[in-house]
Length: 252
Image 1: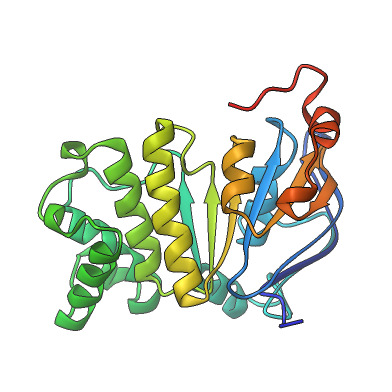
Image 2: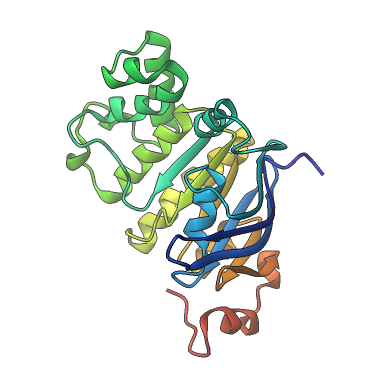
């Protein structure tokens, strides 16, 4: 097996108020693999992603990025932030600047804080950003502001921004839950295709089980902060889904 991009062992997290968010989570993702993460709200999906990218420090167990503890040193923590792209449900775009500058913000971790803050980019960086927009088929919107775009277009800009980082892994936290089903598939088609083409690992928290099964190479299902199921999409049976979501389970 190729070395895991991320590997957790016995991962646990308890919030200061005593809430146990994760318990004994063993998780891995290989280069180029697409993993769909499912589970009810509050099951621990978003907490997992925040532990992986270093925003949260586990209270138990370990999180390794390319074989090294995420928080082993400030330098390695910066490497994780630089090499891990994020896509959010709310898009996370800067409303006052152009689509092109929003994509270029993905380079801030590589070029330094001050150059990123004043939007000072080289011609090579601008060309990279334009290529990223081309790959998600939204190049013709490069000069517009985010508010001029539809929700699906804004999420494609967010994907282009993450790609501009040239990441090793892409973490997507409910990236299509605010979109209609047809637009959701367009967005996931672009993200998954590019990850497969470039060998980028992708972990996607998804509300829709049908989308999780359609796009994931592997499914990881959380229940009450623990991994309840891990396997191939075809192995995720209705009986398992009822265990995760309850007797009245229905996909959304």
